[in-house]
Length: 279
Image (cartoon, rainbow, N blue to C red; front, side, top):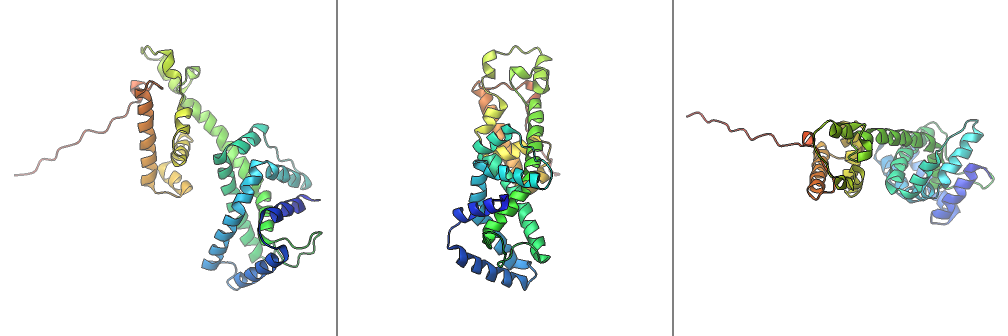
């Protein structure tokens, strides 16, 4: 069984509805969308429905590592290796945020490819004459998602490494004494009780809402506020609010003795200026 057949099998098992009837419905939908060259409001609605239907299936395949393994098999058939670090597989298995990040990039790329293929007269066909006949459109789309996994994974893995590198700059733990904040601490005359290092930056960040974590992590990676807003599809004001909330959480942790923030890193509001009114 090829990787594509295996993916179709997974999709058919996970998706609801009688297969032959579903293929007929999909064929009718594609025929209707073809009148507008797979563009416009109707096509956007079709993409949204397809996204919602395959999302839980794709996330499940990322969680059990079956999708990465199938992607590796596909790449091997194409003549090149897709290396996936075992640590990354463990993270994808345990971390829902990591799965969401990879899933979004992967599915967005797959949607773009699907539209290009349909406009070019390629891609899914209701009369496909494969070993198992035609797959339903969602099953076919899950296959396309799998082919897009490699690039989405490599982008996520690179950003994860960059986060680790940047995190050293923001690390409040004693073990980071040679870099970032640790270097600043060693250059001061402050006497710091070892106990205040019981909690580090990452632990406090993990306690925040997912939206706040995303904003802070992207900020640490070096993205500007406008870029973060675009990536997370939120307003620039929301980005500032999330950063303010996390700064507040850091100072609350410092007040509770969980973490120590050197005086040089304290931020204060600018003094309010008075405006003289002419008599």
